[in-house]
Length: 110
Length: 114
Image (cartoon, rainbow over the protein chains, first blue to last red):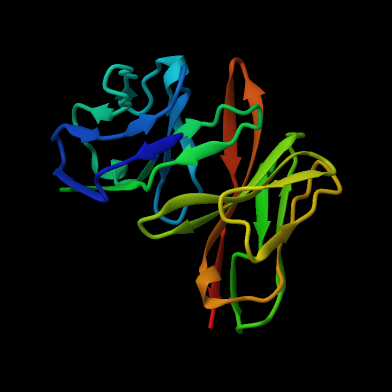
């Protein structure tokens, strides 16, 4: 079965501390993974995708096929990073469908 | 471009009432989706469409219907509203970008059924 798990509902850190939001997946074959972010009262937006190997707003995520993980990391959290973060896995069909994790709320305290 | 737009932003329904949530996109995307977002549950796919005239069920389709008569519009219909349908509803569209899909989301509709 194709599945995405985000084990933490809430992650609270202080400004300047490192952040790691966990994401594990279940998928046969080569997965395509994404991180989406939803700031307060805003729509979901794509943060980054593993295929691009990019860094957006200081965030990076590395696909670890051995551990079936795609954790989101940032070395120094900022207050403006406070948001809901969703990890998503593209389904194997050619419909563009995504399977979302349960989401993790990141709270960065001053 | 307005991107993905949704109306209304908020709505309160009584049990048994019906309503249509509107969704439109101006990016000429073939793929469109409806999700519901419940606290602690993430986003669940209700229905999706891969082009005008083609729709299919997602993970949680019961109590909903959709149509896709044009590329731009993808309305979601609730026929007999139930308290379990209290949720935030997001519409999204997507296209292939390079080797990857990217989904673009609307602002959401917050629905309460009492």
